[in-house]
Structures are given as structure tokens and as C-alpha cells.
Amino acid sequence: MSDDATLQTMMPGQILARGVCRHMLGHGFVTVEEFVPESGLRFDVLALGPKGELWVIECKSGRADFRSDQKWQGYLPFCDRFFWAVDADFPTEILPEDTGLIIADGYDAEILRFGPETPLAGARRKAMTQRFARHAALRWQAARDPGVARFDSLS
Image (cartoon, rainbow, N blue to C red; front, side, top):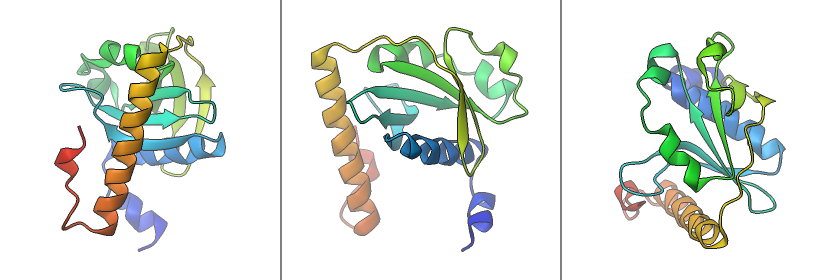
């Protein structure tokens, strides 16, 4: 399947996440999508940097998608930086100015604004990094052997 055909099968938020993940890799970050730090929360993208930094990136496909997101402030205690990822047509003026901003498409992204850095406490960082590793390993196992690994065991 060609790259363009793959994009045609994806939802708008998934397209943004793909571009964000590609861009983060270029900065030395590895990423996981749909990460659950605790019950009731789900990050679109969690990025782990080369120095152990953890960034949460929430992908918003439009104004209604952003307005309906009532949980994003609950994500802040789980990351060193928080970003919104939107496409070039998104009305960025509605996003909080004290958060990061990424413009993305299905192929790449660009960081336009960094939100404040609020370093995690050591114990939280260790727990999040371990969850990240477990999540990534389970995803890989599920891709390699779908009959054994289950995505619903990722919490």
C-alpha cells in the first residue's frame, strides 16, 4: 500500500499523530500513541526524549474536537512539556498561549511554540518511563504476534 493510500484510511487525528511522531524522531524522541497513564486518561502521543524528557502531544482535528476536550489539563502532571498538534487550517488563536504548538500533516510537523517546561519528580518520571517501555513492548508484540498480545492489557 502506498503512503498516500495509507493516509486515506486514517482518521484526521491519526494523520496528525503520524506526522508528529515522524518529526519527534528527527529530534531524537521515540513515541507511542494512545498511551494511558492512568484510568480515564489517554494521550494521543507520548514522546520520550534522549535525556529522558517526556512530552505529551494532543492532536486536534478541528475547533469542535478541541472544545470537547475536557481532560487535557489532567495530562500536565504526567509530562515535562505539553503540546497541541493541529493542521495548518486550525484556528490556533483558540489554543491556550501557555501550551506548546505543533503544526502537522501526515508526513511531518513543525514545532511553532514551546510551552513551559515543568520537570517531573523523579519517582513520577521513573514510573512513566517504565509504563512507556511496557506499552511500546506490548505494541511490538501485538504487531509481531496478534494472537498472543492484547492491546487492552496496555494499562
